Structures are given as C-alpha cells and as structure tokens.
Image (tube, rainbow, N blue to C red):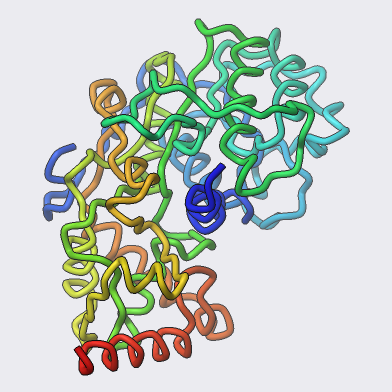
Length: 373
C-alpha cells in the first residue's frame, strides 16, 4: 500500500471509525414523508449511541417503529432511556440477544470481521433483514476512471488481523461485508457504503473543521483550488435512507454519497461564508506546496493523486433507490448551530485539520515564497 493511501485512510475516512442528487449545493429544502410505509417494524440497532446511531434511532422512532439497542452501555448512556437495552459486548458477550427476534437489524458498529460474523450468525434466524454500514474505503482498485459498487474491494494477506489501521481499515470492512453475506444471505442483506459522514454530532471534525475554523475569522488556509472535487453524506440523509431500506425492503450494495462533480471545495467555502458572515479571508495554497510541507487536510485530496477517485464515487444506484441529499448549505448551517452549543473546552481544539499555530506557520511560508518569486 502506498504512503498516499495510508495517509488518506489515516486522516480521512478511517478517522471517523475510531471515534462512521444533482444540484446538492443549492438552497432547496428536502422534505421527508411523515407516514410510515406498511406496519411498524421492530428494529435492533447494534450500537446506537455514537455519532450516526442516534440519528438512525431518532428517524426510526419518528416514523413509528419500535427500536431496541445493543451496546456496552458506556457511550452516551443517557441517550434513549426509554428504549430497551440489550447490554453486552461484540467481542465476547452476545448473550442478551440470544432469545430475541426482530424484523431488522442495523449494524453500524462493526469493524472487526469476527465480531460481525458472530453477531450475524446469532441473528441469522432472529431477523428478516440485516443492514450493515460499511464505507467507500473498501475499494481496493482506485486506478480506474470510476468507482462504483462493482469495483474490486481491498484484501488482506492475513485475514486473521483485527487491528484497525490505515492499511487494514478498508479491507477489514470488506471482510465484514462478506461475513454478513455469508451468514445472512444476499437476499436479506443491505450494505451501505458512505463517504465522509458529516452534520450535527460529528466528533471527528473532518467536515466540521471548515465551518468551525471559518467562525474564528481572519486569514484561513484553503487547499488546492475551488474546483477540487469532494464528496460527503449528511448523517441525517444516511439515516433517512437507512430506514427507507428497512421499510421498503431495499437490498443490495449502495454507495451513499453526494453525486460526483456536484460539490467542490469552492462550494464548501461558499456554504461556510453564507452561514458565517465575518471577516474570514480565504487563501488558496497549491497542492505542491502542501505536499512539500507534508500537510493533509480533511475531506480534501490532491485531485491528481491516486486517492482522488474516492472523491468522485458513483452513487447513482442509491439515488435510484431513493437516497435524497439535502442542500450542502443546510448541512453547514446545522453543523454550525450544533457547534455553537458545545463547551469552550471542546471547540478550542479541532480533532482534524490544522492547529492555528500550524496554519499561521504555513501561511507565512506561503507568502514568503510568493514574495520571493
């Protein structure tokens, strides 16, 4: 694996795992249907209290479904006090699930194939529908002109490896997918492969860094050019589509992303400036400069680099199945509103992006180089 791919996985999509329509950047709102399709479902969520889980739980409850949780009871354990909790550990304790039955399961906490295989095997006769949240990082061949659901996934020489690193994250998630198919069967399985998941509640700051840093004002470093492609998925759109898949019995593999070539760094800048009216002044620095300085920035990738294709993933299959992407401006607005509710000790340090000191240093070097040219 190249150093570029390792860096992409370490600072990009992998970072989210360690804490998960054309014109998507217009200002048109997305309306969700209020009525539940068919009868209410009994849904088991493996996890449910991290970042993406609560959004899925709330959406399912909003539509009138019955939701139960399985987790260790440690993360955000004050959430959903009225829901039934099956307390356990995916590593070695699934006993609380042995006597239950559900219409569907949402597995958004599986990163180790052994864990996913054990839960899928136990639940194979207890659920009708298994939905697994994977990632676009599963794709092993990023050399072609397009990445879609048929693109080859990455592999491991040693499939017994369980440590999640920049090198193993994607192949491990691919193995998790295979374990679900093996235990549940393709006819009862849905695999969603999101790109960068963003929106209110994201603790990784991968997307949040950009509007949060904009809030501070002043000169701000922006990478590459305004035309560099990026892709995201709002966590609420992912949650909506997840519940849609359960209600409508949508099976198969789906890339859940904003449409390729519809969202660029310049659009992200526009969203930030539209939501935050202050004195932030963008300075675009070249890809070559960032490479020389060994700087990587979240959700952006060198458009000529080997990983650039993962910012142009084909999501047409999910769109055809009903995925609806809200305007990216709405994502920026709601992310900023959420960020402003957090305590100062949280917002004073970004979990992704540049420190203010490093940004100042880079801008000084950049201006010195241009002055000397």
